[in-house]
Amino acid sequence: MPTLEQRLTDYLATITGSASDFRDAPGAAASRLPLFLRERYQLRSLGLFGRECLMALETPGWETGSPAEYAAHAQTMLAQFSEPVTLVVPQVASYARNRMVQAGIPFIVPGSQLFMPFMMVDLRERFSTPATDAGQPLTPAAQCILLYHLLRTPLHGMPLQDIAKLTGYSAMMVTRVKDEWETNSLCQTSRVGRSVVVEFAANGLELWRKAEPLLSSPARKKHWGRWSRPERPALAAGYTALSRTTMMVEDDPVPIVALHRKDFRALHEKETFRTVSEYEEANVLIQEWSYNPRLLSDGPCVDPLSLMLSLRADNDDRVQQQLQTVLDGAFSGASPNK
Image (cartoon, rainbow, N blue to C red; front, side, top):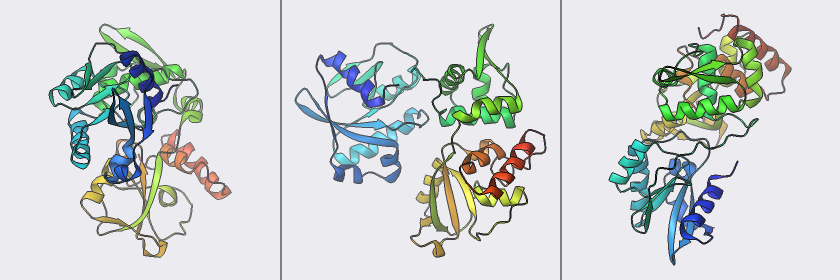
């Protein structure tokens, strides 16, 4: 599957009639951005019509942002660089595109739309569904909603718009999730009246086993640190959760918790958490998750299937034995989170 930069290169070649010359933005430029923007975007410099343009390419795995969110990102970059930075994103809905144009946000959806008001505009309606290769890991949204189906509410036979309302994801994101599932033979769809409904290829444990090779640990980063007070949305995770839901004895006195990356950034902004360089100084280890653990658990611990995915690479036989207990409980109706 072509990268976003490759798609952008091909698209600009069709628009301008010549190959684009991409370069990494100066390191000092990127370092001026807040951490969350450095994680979300890769800054690239592009020579276009004799002018240097800054492009911010959204890194893989992010959910499509709202117009307001992208506007805030663009304004922050404008304030830092005193020149417009063009956001390059995989896809936006038509309503979001209109709002971004009205707000004057420079953006490009490669192969679909380009809005650089200081230079050129291409807003023809040419929506295409990005191809998804079979066997590739599911995106965080596709994984989260699949686990939601397995653990919380069955989605079999449910219209896509109802899945969106139930899970809090956008309708466009759920459509992309459906495409990933279909590509990997996890589901098929049918039309009922005006609605598209999902029909899964297997149930329960069978579906889990079919999907497991496509699933990843939701814990993308970890942060040793100190917080002045526990964060309410934080759920016990990792070995802490394993010890609370099985016979595993927890040796480490520092609790491990999970937070969605958005909640982790909010924690930093409120200055109730700071990272530490020495383990002995820490009173918490925060796992920064690629999806919201609260969507899958109402209890004090993260859901059992995400817990298993986060620890399945551990070679300790005791851990693997307890993870099997967690898995058995998840599909027997005896999950400790229920």
